[in-house]
Image (cartoon, rainbow, N blue to C red; front, side, top):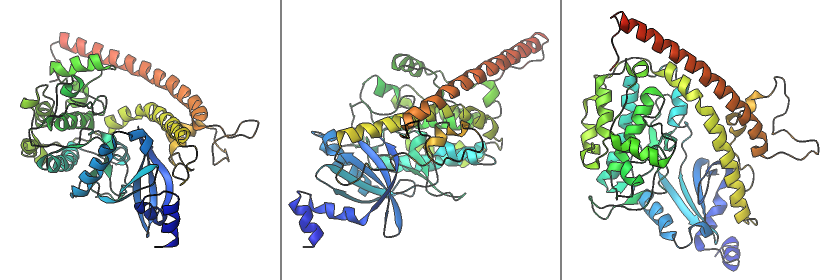
Length: 413
């Protein structure tokens, strides 16, 4: 027995805790309900380590072991790879492949051009991962753009599906789950109505992602669960002419086949993979990027708010674990680009400071304090943009109405 292993034993640490010394922890990549995700280096390789506070999952430890078992079984080029796991007396650590190429929507905004054909091939990668999960009787239950990551910055990097925290392995292919799951705007109606759900919920989420990928905004606009349920149940998917006139009918048919309120009528992963749109043969070469970028720019406000939530969540986790004996909640706890995400770029040109501003007492402000001012300015700017866009829409509507009166206006699909 090594000296470090002996010391761990004396301090009440589990046997696997000895592995932790092999990793050098870096920045925090995200924070969730039960813990955080940090970047780490081991043997010259970089990994993502999900750190879960045991007190947060007390009585529900099976959830953590289920995630580890599930990840170890999943071996697919479009699913993030499991690497290792270990635990301390206070925490669980799940080590996975680190995806450094950025989230799906952020990466698209960096492209010089992104066509409908590109979108079809992007969705095909996601669908192949989902089909692999469903073949193995696994339901992801939290498909959303934030969980779709590019492995590297390379232009031809593959896309991987991440975050299996609420994924479930079914006892049989038709088994039903009853616990609440998913993210607002992406969760299928049967989840929100607590009717029992299975594999079809992933296909619904994929439908929302596909719609958003092709226009930059969600097919559902409701801001509360009750209204969202009614909107989803209606089965009415609107393809607004301005954004969809140059998108193929096959793309729209594909989306409608996924966004069926009745799960039994929804495309399965196998059926979706056979759809003609995914071949790219009928997808257009129309560049979606200009409109997509314009709409995604409005998401900066939401990203800034999420940064504040991340900072507050990490602070809350520190409060739960003030001792932090193994340093997993130590600095740097905020993502490296958090200041920029929160609107810090609004600062005057020529500012020499490389960190967060300080107050008159020399004490560093928290990210929340700094970001709130930036967020307030972003709210004002967003309102101004909305008013300008409203005026433009009214002009377009008036022009369309005049054309219709002259008999030369053909309404969009």
